Image (cartoon, rainbow, N blue to C red; front, side):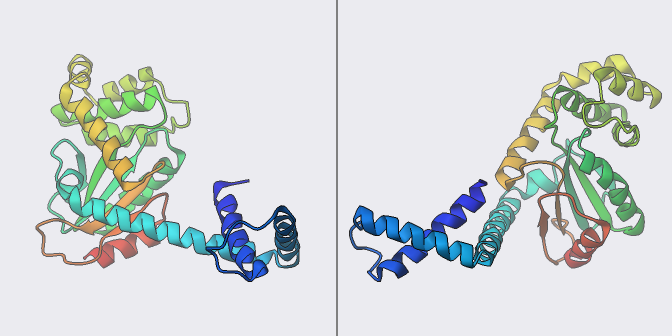
Length: 260
């Protein structure tokens, strides 16, 4: 039984308990015989009206999602500089765009791989869109290695090239190796010796660590995750949107339009 369903049942049983006893909620615990009777009433009621479980679950899910959204929007406001203006984050699209899309991702994430061409299409169709890419390597050591390599490649001006090559490689879900990352880096004309040195730098390690902390504060349980908002300091004054999971081009475009 899922946690959500258990919670739903507890809420429902508490409600029926009060009704069946016809007593105030603050009264003492009923005797065992009464308890058994109430449990049977709940059991019979659920069998006769199973649709109520769906209704209660949907209501609970909606409340939990709203709570997550409220928390995320508060974090986005508090962590604005770290999310939108971090000098160590890779930026794609128009660096001076009035609308910013922030993506938390992992190079081995299937959903992130599916979202890659969507984000590229959004960049092509929105000349005023700025994209901040947040490395969030949660799929093991190979993901950590790839994230560090891309961040390190910034020192050679090749981060975007390696980022694109990794997603276009199709090496996802356990297929990616450290050797693959270096092979792709070499193909992108990146100096491997300098790359490895930069991968061990405090700057790279700090960036990945900070991204994990931001993701945790936002309540992200996986990848991808998106924030679409007016770029701080720009003329855009629209709505901030938080999407904790995979999306599609239509939803993201609507968020971009709302932010602008």
